[in-house]
Image (cartoon, rainbow, N blue to C red; front, side, top):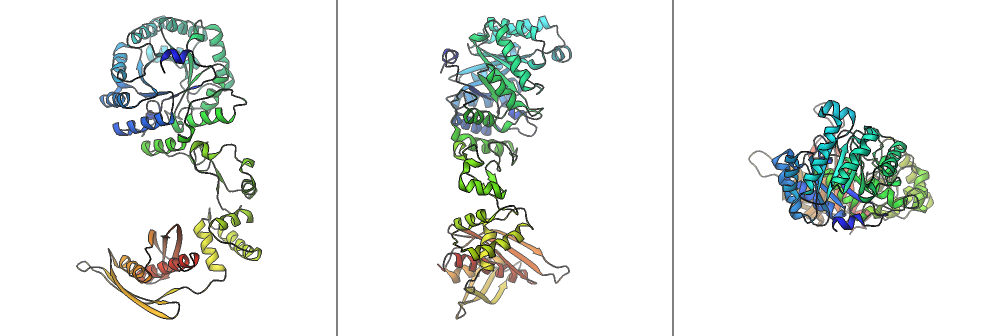
Amino acid sequence: MNQETIKTATPEKIYLFDSTLRDGEQTPGARLNYEEKLEVARQLARLNVDIIEAGFPISSPGEMRAVQGISRQVKGPIICALARAVQSDIDAAWEAIRESERPRLHVFLGASDIHMQHKLKKDPALLLEQGVEAVKYARRYTEDVEYSPEDASRAREEYLYELLEAVIKAGASVINIPDTVGYAIPEEFGALIRRLRENVEGLDKVILSVHCHNDLGLAVANSLEAVKSGARQIECNINGIGERAGNAALEEIAVALRIRQNYFPYHTDLNFSEIYRTSRLVSKLTRISVPVNKAVVGLNAFAHSSGVHQDGILKNKETYEIIDAELIGGTAAQICLTARSGRHAVLDQLNKLGFSLNTDELEIIYEHFVSLADKKNEVYPEDLEALILDHLSFTEPRYKLDYLQTVSGSKSIPAAIIRLIKDDESTIEEVAVGSGPIDAAYNAINKITGLNIGLENYSINAVTQGRDALGEVQVKMSYQDRTITGRGTSTDIIEASVIAYLNGLNKLLKINGYQ
């Protein structure tokens, strides 16, 4: 798609300009290396954003190299580079993106009185001329030139009118209105966009864009209000990362436009199924965690803990969910079992685990569930399995410990002799080695059972004080498609470890019908 295509595109199309690799990377601690920037850019292309602002090339040789790499290797979106309104910046930006199949130069210069007086220390008329000359210079390289009057939401409007008319005449094809410090309120920002469209000659012939920061928590709201008022490009970042409180979150804007099409009669070309994957990749590479309650992509976005909500979701998920998790490639509704959960939610989870309980059995388990839920924040599937096995009538454990001996030392190979009683009838003994005495004991048990049981997690705690303290071992074990927790106590930590392993083993065997 060339620039002419963008200009004549249907007005219902909203262009998504992703600045994760430029403004987003300015988040403290979010520095990405060359390969990481390329990986994010490739994922943004799969997400099908319209424009990728790949960086600020003049800022460092590493930044120049990364933007060049993205320009050469990433196809599909327009690749944009940022430059101050000076020739050296523009030269560097063009050098970085000139090999892109669709390059864009993005030039910016302060426009508010506070920026002009205190940062730039120049007369407004001189700065206006500087902006015009910068656009003309950038046009020598490409017809796709975006101009941003920095801090536009705090600028004098009469000055903005004059400035924008001048840079449009100079050849700017995209005009971006930044709320640089997140100062705007939605109603006034929307009104500013409308007045600009009414008073700036030529603005109807270019793409009108907005770039909102989140200092007052209004970046997404301001961006959507601007769309209502005539903006057709939104500049935003994955997970809303960016300087200070961040920028408008791309995923929130895109999903809001999609879900509320009755209010926003527009569309984007975004590949919605890549949203969740993109969010997690950016979080991983920038080392910035996504808040659990983050809209659209937070871990709790599709989680329910209230009993009333859980009951509604189990009957029809539309009762408490307006977004289908599958839309963004995320996880479907999750029921978080807590002290507020009702019988319906507990029974549903038990059914998913393969347990079929009658009314009396459910009452027994639910009573113990409530007691457990009062002691911990969340009750997990493994906890429910343990409640079933501990409080309903089952046969005796299949394997019991009869004899244990281990050998270890700085100059010896760790080994274990294990003898187990099977079904209270026969005894089976095996010897095995391992990386330590506990590992050796577990290997011996696996040899006896003939099962390849995986150990997911191992932890030990002292139950009592003193040198003869009772030790409690907890292991998380997996077999086939199941995981379960085993527990064991003893003053001997190796014996406690074996008891815990056998405890988990017997639970797994019960659940799987002694396979």
